[in-house]
Image: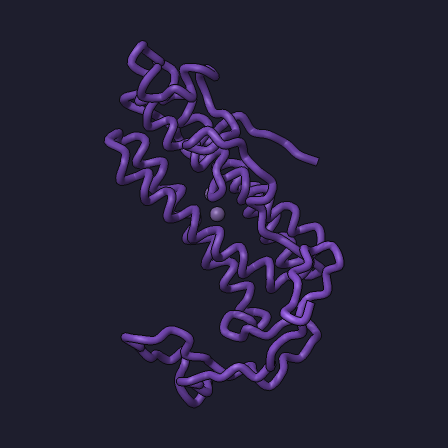
Length: 245
Ligand code: MN
Ligand code: MN
């Protein structure tokens, strides 16, 4: 069951409407890193997560993301409330489709369920969520840099802040399971190449803890060990006569 409160989670007051900036804001409404993606991703994940405390966290964050979606939508609505003739060129998406948010990104591409990263395992999902929060935070930073309206920047700075909080929550949940710095999960054991690192680019090589002992074995000059694969068998392919024929 859902309730909706008509008050927004934070005040939304745009000082100077700018339809072109409204177009940029669509990235966080109907774009890949946007609030619809986050809300639906955490919500759908919560259906398959057996740990009650992590399921509850995901549902709380999902609903906060819906509150963010509402706030971004209000920002877009206010930025597009005074469409003028110039907006035909500066913000054609709104000039054609009308005032307010639409579920497209800043380039006009329709929102797509393939943006959602989820599937069947709590560790997998929480890691995906950390990446999602990083994407959202980065888009908000770009939007803040592109904005000259103080009211807008205040809202966007709050939204950026909350994505950091969410990333910290997902990290704390992984830490509770001992999975924050342990890449193993699931039931299948990896093979004996698990600590092997290949140097497959030649030139100005650099080393770091990701390819050094004691955690990793570094293969500086890796050789293929698979032999030549058998030729394909394809009766429909064109037949080239051999020398004997
Ligand atoms: Mn958000
Ligand atoms: Mn978030």
